[in-house]
Amino acid sequence: MIDLSAVKTLYNSMMDSLVSSTGLAVPCNVVHEDPKGSGCPNCYINPVTGRSSSRFEHTIVEPIIGKDRVPDDMYIVYMDENSSFYSSGSQNTQQSGLDFFRAAYPSSLVFILDVAREPLQIVYPSGFLDDDKVFSARVDAGVYITRDSGVASGATDSYQVMQNIIASGVSSTVSGLFNNATSATIARDNSSSMVPSDVAATYSGLLTSLANTGVVVNNTTIFDHEEMLCPFTVGCVEKTSVVSAFLNYCDTYATGTISANYCSGVPVTNVESSREVSGEFVWFPEGHICPVCNGAGFFPTTTIQARNIVVVFDNKKFINFGNVNVQQGDMQTITPISMYTDLTTADYITVDTSVTPYAQNKFTRVSEPQPVGLGSNRYIFTNWERSS
Image (cartoon, rainbow, N blue to C red):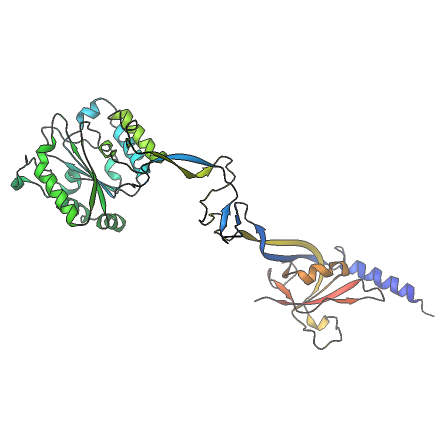
C-alpha cells in the first residue's frame, strides 16, 4: 500500500528545492508603483484652496525700497571722458562695476553716448564692451555726440545713433529688448570738462524721440563723477541684495552718498524672500506653485522587491490549470504561496537578463495565482504576459 504521507513529503521536499535560490529559481524583481505614494517634502496641499503651501513658514525677510519701481529697460548717459576717475584707481575698477550692474539689472540696455572729446575721451576697460547689452556711440557706431550748446542745428540725433547700433548686427534678443523698451533713465555729465548745456539740444531731441516711440523716461540726473554706470543709481527701483551690491560699489568708487540717501522718504517694506534659514526647503509664496513638485503635492513611488522565482517561458511546458478561461501568456511562475499577496498586488515583474530572452521586459499578470500541492497548497502557479 502506498504511503501517501511519504509521497506528500517527497513532493513538498522536491518543490521546496525547485523554488529555492539553489534550485531553478532565478532573480526577479516584483515591482509596485504608486502614483501618489510620497508626499512632497517641500509642500502640502491646502485642503481649503486645493493648492500647494510651503511647509516652512519662517522666511528670512529682506528690506525692499521703492518696491513699486522696477529697473528701466534702457540706461543712457552723456559723458565726454572718465580719465579723472581712472587716475584714482585701477583700470579694471569700472569693469567690476559692470559686473555688479549686470547682476542687478540683467536685461537692461546701456548706451554710453560719447560726447566730442575736449581733449580727452572715455577709456573703456578691456572687456567692458564685450557685454552684449552695453554700447558706445564712438566704438559701436563711430559717432561722437556734438557739443551743440543748445542750438538745434548743431544737435546729434541720439536716438538714431542708438537705432544704428542696434541695426549693426546685435542678437535678436538684444534687438527685441530695444524695440520693446518702455522705460529709460538718462544721465548727463557735469564734470570740469563738460556741462549739461553742452548737449542741451541733443538731449531735448532724445526726450522727444523716446516719447514718440512710447518710452517713458522715469529718471534724469546730472552727475559730477565720471564713473560710467553709477549715474544710473537714481530713482526708486526694487532694492534687492544684488542691487545693494551695485549701490555699495558706487558709494565706494563714486559719490559716496548713494546708498545712504537712496530713495529718501520712501518707506522700507519688509517682503518675503525666497530663502529660509535651515536650507532644507525652497520657499515659495502662498498661492504660488511649489518649485519642487510643481504643485502636485506628491511624488510617484516605486517599490522593488527582489525575489527568487521559478520562471518558464515555453508555454508548452506550462502547468495546465484545467480552466479554459485562464490565459496562457508568455511566462509562467512557480512560487511559494507566501508570495501570493506580493504577486496579486504587483504592477509587473522583471526577470534577470541572463535568463529571459526579453532583455529586462516587464511582465504583467494575466491570471490569478493558482494554489497547488498535495493537500497543503504550499505553492502557486501564475501566468504573465510581456508588456509591449
